[in-house]
Length: 406
Ligand SMILES: NC(=O)c1ccc[n+]([C@@H]2O[C@H](COP(=O)([O-])OP(=O)(O)OC[C@H]3O[C@@H](n4cnc5c(N)ncnc54)[C@H](OP(=O)(O)O)[C@@H]3O)[C@@H](O)[C@H]2O)c1
Image (cartoon, rainbow, N blue to C red; front, side):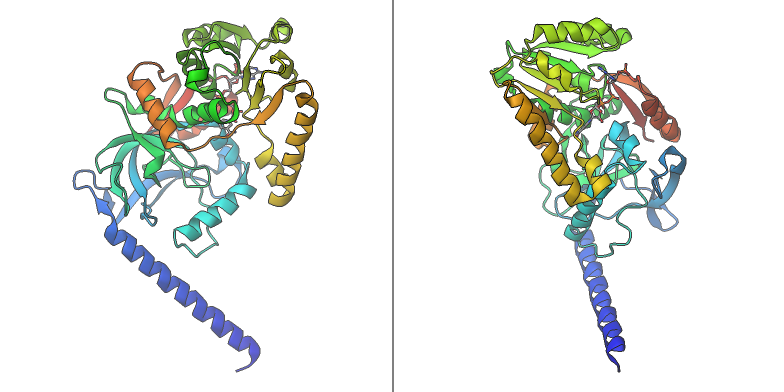
């Protein structure tokens, strides 16, 4: 046997060993997984199947197809399987279908697959199902899950590198869900987790404003009529902050009804002038996707005030330059901006969506206590998912776009 043949033999043996290890891991996890008797996934043609909307490439809306696939098994301790009743559409979903973030997300997918014992790295990206949040019923729980039970009605999130919720079933760690308060519809519940956790992260983690320090603080919300903006207005005013919302003229009434003290039209040239002249804000959260740093002059100087953007260049730079180059460019950008603005006593920060079990429970409590409500632009049926994506891509939605799943 020559050297080349030996190498082939070794590779073949390694592949067989990995395959056997994977089968063993799957058998162990499946035997630990419990299925509810009442809410069993429907069985078609001898195997558990589901419908889901998926993409086989980054060709935008043109690549969207409805597929009938196997319901994925629970491979990781702590994961749960949810029968989805409703899901929302987020700007990240409509950006991901054209390849946004794929550089960084693929690395996260590879690491996630290894953690689940999946050694086949050929199919980490496609077929891809998007959808970052959902409401539904827990139908199976993995090993070690104690915080939720089969049959619980929950709402929650799926991390951006995982298969999404625009499907009849979705898998997520049990720490990514909370129980839906009684009397709240699945559509209302599904509108809140991703936007709410993003709003919480922008305010508390990046903006460093917590409920006890909020009373008396002045916060400017750019993009106050969107999914994240409508949540921010409600959460911040419930915490006692004074909120000024910037939105389109036709959304001003809505924004005021969500607790903002003032609403201003972003198309009116006087708006920026008024706000910059005010220079009295403790926090500005840019949920408009503009990253307009002119607004930094509206912050109070030298009191620890910050401008927090929800549109950091992190994923975009990683797509353009590769992950190491993109990370370096992004860090350089944020440092350079702060070198200028910190000299004026104002900080420029990024914010990201973050799964957070504590914040998710807080959202559930605020919903139960009527401190926040769902703001829904339109509910689409599962068959109408392409139209739901189209409506978000066209813009000017107020609050959230929802998909009702059968
Ligand atoms: N970093 C993260 O992890 C993360 C997570 C979630 C969201 N985001 C980003 O955060 C932004 C908000 O998300 P979303 O779900 O709320 O999006 P959305 O529902 O599309 O809302 C965006 C809102 O911004 C308004 N808007 C557009 N241009 C504006 C301007 N110049 N001034 C003020 N308002 C303006 C829009 O109003 P009109 O329709 O009237 O123009 C719309 O209501 C998006 O850019 C999204 O990509 C980032």
